[in-house]
Image (cartoon, rainbow, N blue to C red; front, side, top):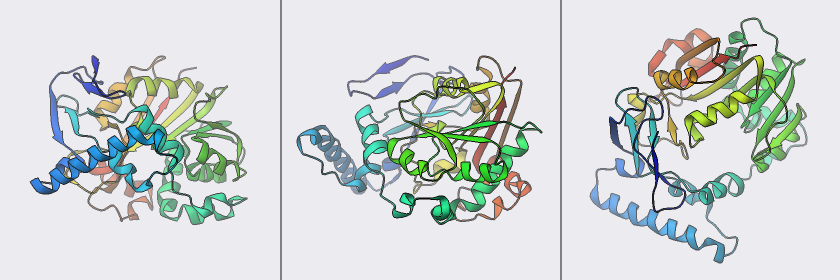
Length: 325
């Protein structure tokens, strides 16, 4: 893929599709541009410009920074989607400085996260309970009878998926990685052998690597997938969970998906997986879950059949691939 740097440091303009190398890219109006009201669009544009100027000057302004601005900071101008395979990527991505602000400094402090043990974890993840348990069940069933002894939860967040996997497989040694703020919180849960900080590569391979809600935040789809693949031991498994960016997804103007930079459907996901070296010996890709128009409906996570029922119309895409020995 040919990538040309723009004059804005850290941003890129996309000329080709990452997945199939096609140049037939469909320009999609996205986020701030979704509103058809010209006045609102103009006001929003000036607001984003003001925020970017503020970010540029921030090192001179001290530690103050309004956290509520982070979504505005990451609003992309345009999304390009390949007409051939459906893969989408933002044409104007956040700079390294903006990413550092978002990931390292401006997570909302949540008192429950600082609990000294895991007793409060279910309270933190109530909105994840059905979804998290269903996701863990999917991972365990997709292992096809294998019994991994080590698991890395890459970008573990609150650790909810690790918690459910640990409950189901207490003999499996759990590891995690995330940004410093979240790493400190996960260490207090008491279920991880080791928690790796952002920027510190795991120093071993794992029988199972899970990355839920991670791939869509990366800048380059193939290189980030290769990085995750490198953590998988021979004969091991890699599990990915990403939003399923079907046509309905782009019709919703109140999504809270920032700062996503990659957008997947089953076809481009399969293309990226097929390029892995060594090549996977098995690949399982399952769309399903809630409809994008029913974000508050969690009944689809009550069983695996209900999850799979929505198929390509579902808002979730689950991928399990096995590495050769």
